[in-house]
Amino acid sequence: MANLSSGFDEMGSFSFTDFPEDVQLCILSFLSPSDVVTFSCTSKRVVSLCRNDRKLWFTMCDRRWGSKTQIKNWGKGNITYRLLYRTLLQWENLLGFWRRSGSSSVSSPPLVFFEWGSDFLAGFRVSPSRNGTYDVVKSPFLWLGLSSEGKAMGFIDPKGCSDFAGKFADLGESDFSDCDLVPVDLSFMGKNHFVIEENQTFVYPNSPEQRKKGFRRSSSFANLAAATDVNEVASGSPGSLPDQLMSEIYQHFANRTSPGGDRASRRQRRREKERLGKKKWEPEHFVKIVNCSPTPLRPLQGLWKGISDDMSMDFYLVVYDDIGGISCRRVRDSSERFSSNAPVFWTSNTTFLETPFSLEEELLYDCRIHVRPLPANDIEELVPSIENKKISRILCVNSSYDLVLPDLAGSIPNPRNVEGRIWQYNNGTFGFGFLRDNFIIDLQHIARNGLILDTVE
Image (cartoon, rainbow, N blue to C red):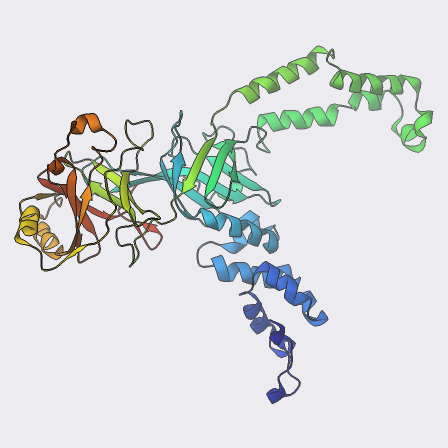
């Protein structure tokens, strides 16, 4: 980085400041904030440029997030871009899928997906459809943005039916107190864990509660000002205040702080306690799904969706552990029985069977039906979809019954009750099944390139 401001022997006296300003800004926009601070110390001529919020810090924000969100609209354009950079850099870690951790007593989703909005960051509930197709239901859950003063704002949509896209800048600035949104605070607990808690101290600026509070503040000294001439008080020293005014001021603050104050003050405190006691949202913890997409070395890894034999769709999370094993679990509401404990399949041996396959393995695949939805109108579309899924490799797996539910498997489990196969197809997807069943559950991607596939509102 020191070479930026140093001269070059081949070009004579030529430094970084000799570049046009737009070129300088473009180069500096690739640096981190700490690098910008360090570089500003190398020369007095670049200090002003590095401190220019509307030029450098806007360029840094625009280069990193300009194609994903509208930089100038955040905070109604009244906040500094340095603050915006720090905020978006932290919230950028929210992008992707998160799982709820622990049980929930409210309608909290087990799976949340974050993506950029025009001037906000939106979190959506993601759940399987119940219509026998691969459709994914996506509904609003959490909105994050900045006020015109640069304060972070968060709102939960408990019912998942509100659409504040394009109107988020008005949240916190206008009276939305009659809507179902719940003000919340989002706090990170490490890079891959956050908690959402209700912000019970949040008051909408134009709400009736805020107007009453403003009226009480503006009129708290109205009677005191009427007791004496305002000019006399302003021009005199504190010791020259009339005895009656001093007595009323003392009584005013005594009533506000004394446990035995006037009845109005006690009623106000009681109402405040009642308001704080009416929680709309209990604290919820979420953990990030770091590896939600397959890689060349881990082709089965990630979030998948598949239709079971009862024609209900489930989400599946396939994870590679540190010792080379593979396990798969359904992503369901933790209130459901065995929803988060029992793996669907697992294996400690990740060695695939390559072609040519034995006649026994070909028979195991050919004698099973594929569980997946039929096209709505054109049944002929089903034929090429089956032909395109040619098997490239086979992996032997086990079910969970002999590990988690030994009573169901018996004292001496039959190997055919727990043994299964994964059939990986040429298109990168795969299906799985067990020897005790006569069907194959074909899995498809939930998301690709940061976008959820087959979404319905």
